[in-house]
Amino acid sequence: MIKLPQKKAVGSAHSKLILVGEHAVVYGKPAIALPFPTIKAQSTVEELPAIKRTEDLLVDCRYYVGPLEGIPTKLMGIAACINETLKVLGQQPIGIRIHIQSSIPIGRGLGSSAAVAIAIVRSLYKYFNQDLQQDRLMQLVSIAETHAHGNPSGIDMEAASSDIPIWFQKNKEIIPLQMKESLHLVVADTGHVGDTRTAVEGIRKMYQVNPALTQQSLDILEKVTYSAKEALVTGNVEQLGSTMNQAQHELTKLGVSDHSINRLVQTARHHQALGAKLTGGGLGGCVIALAKNEQHATTLADAMRDAGAYETWHFQTAGN
Image (cartoon, helix red, strand yellow):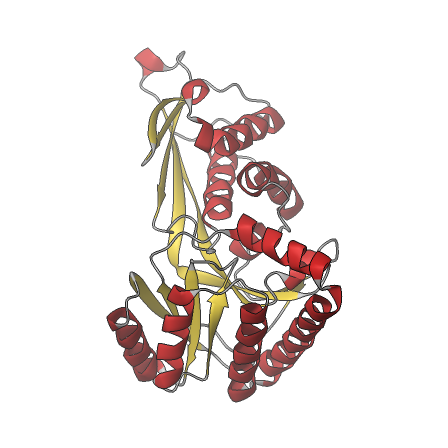
């Protein structure tokens, strides 16, 4: 049976956080990522008015409004993702408008590019009444992610498409993690765009100069990640906080923390956070802190904002 397109379809995706394991994941170590449902990306696909249905596909977002073929260079990953998705669907890039909205700040290690691409692919599949499998979604989103990050690990798109925490190791099966206890988390934006490429390159150069010391930090980050996994599944929130602090110590030694991150981490710990660390690539971006309860999360968020955070969010994860 032929399925006709919808007049309008909406796709969405949430942000993500790396709890522990960033940077070590580049070297084949595991990492744990969490969905960050507070901020999201949304894509709306709708049919153009009858008089314009033979015109090119239109893109409408904060950074560009116009035909797909005229999209600026910084959005070429999105364009490539749209074109490939339409090709897989057997559709031409004409007669529709894609309106993209996102509350996820760019360049903060929160998976903005992955979430936008996921939302777009979901909206196009929904518009053309086609079922979308996870492996196909990841294949299409990886096109945008490669444009955005060069050689991404894949953790952003896996986490941004998952509703529960995941255990991620490059080129291995993704393992969903069930948390025994809910977590109260605070995310604070330093206000500075993170520089993942520079951070990754810095660790690579450090590895060349001092392989033993660098490997030691990577191995400790691996142990910390296994400890964090145990803490999540057993509900040991204090142990989880301790692993976050240990991870931050090693990431600082690896040179990917900076003054803006350190200030917010120290503020959170001064206000009795169970743990606090950078999340994502570092050298800017965001800090994540583990609070004792909802009231404590509010206190931490206020304190970190007073200490210079550009924006803060706090939320509670689901537990079993």
